[in-house]
Length: 246
Image 1 (tube, rainbow, N blue to C red):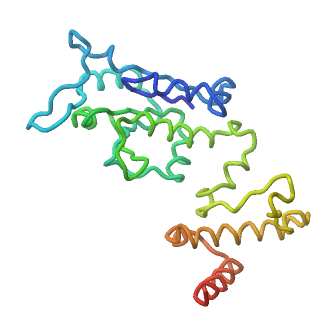
Image 2 (image 1 turned 120 degrees about the horizontal axis):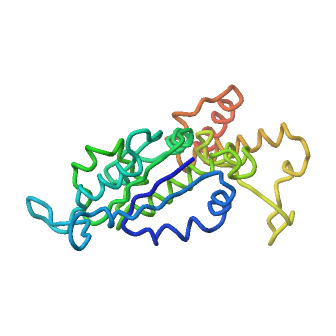
Image 3 (image 1 turned 45 degrees about the horizontal axis):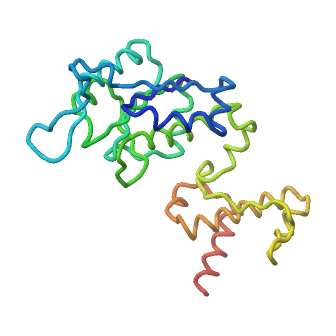
């Protein structure tokens, strides 16, 4: 996958792309990330990328011209993917959206700043506005990194094991079950015996039950979208009765 990030602060993003799993994925050629500085596309003498808003109000608004020219130069005709603008008023980014985006050959992420972007740029060259959560950041760079990370790890080969991305929180619609590693006991807390039993069917059932329990306790709204089998329903019935009796 080829990802293009339009920003006026590429130095905010570059370090994250050089470290850990993302860095290895880029080095191995599983993904390609291009940072595009919007400033050189400005037609103004001093390469300004913002101006005062029409109608008054605080702050500055990013100019349409540099953004439109930048997008058209790198994601114009023949671009095979989505062109997204990181915006607090956008559609909330989810695991399901990450999975859909990971199927595209290309992805463009526009990072806004100040009071936002001239609406005409959005109307002309952006496919969709996306938000990573119900809060406001100083710019779209952190949001872009979140999307890059979430999407990249779904690309085959990036994690080394495809099961790693399939067996985590939200991939199944549930929060992830508790994980343990060595030693078997630490400060009086022992690893659950079932995980040491070698019985893979029982381990899978234990993990499913713990995922259901954690989701019920912390994010119950997620259960409305999860398809439950007979064993799941019996467990949930017993769990609700237990909680009611406490």
